[in-house]
Length: 151
Image 1 (tube, rainbow, N blue to C red):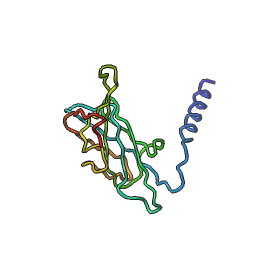
Image 2 (image 1 turned 45 degrees about the vertical axis):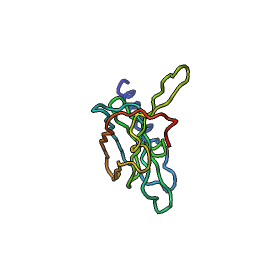
Image 3 (image 1 turned 120 degrees about the vertical axis):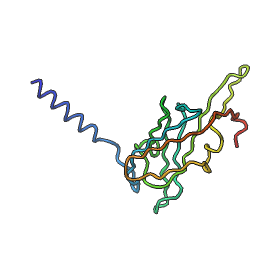
Image 4 (image 1 turned 90 degrees about the vertical axis):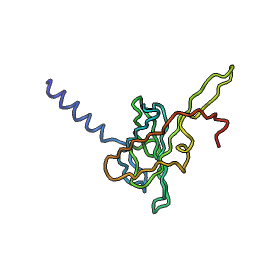
């Protein structure tokens, strides 16, 4: 009886793990992407990472991928925020992190990643291939740019 329960649980687990959401029509299979962000020589936690396609696919669509770094500075990206990984192709890698401080009763937001990394003209790019993809990016020293001063 014990073996029957174990086998049943194993089969149910396999069935559930295969019940992922179907990809939208025209979306190529995404591949795993992990991006590690370092700032001031340490992992940067709670940063947003976005992969913006350099070119549209033949169907004219651009499949964006986004992620958020964990305490180790690692972000696993998801296409359209829900499909694990990114579709193959070239991407600009945008990174940002906002912190908020109380300024005499008024909350003020600051960008702490240097501005060149936050826009489409970022100096960071990568190519996602049909395999597991990893990239490490050092964004240099922390900055403190007021959200009011951002373009």
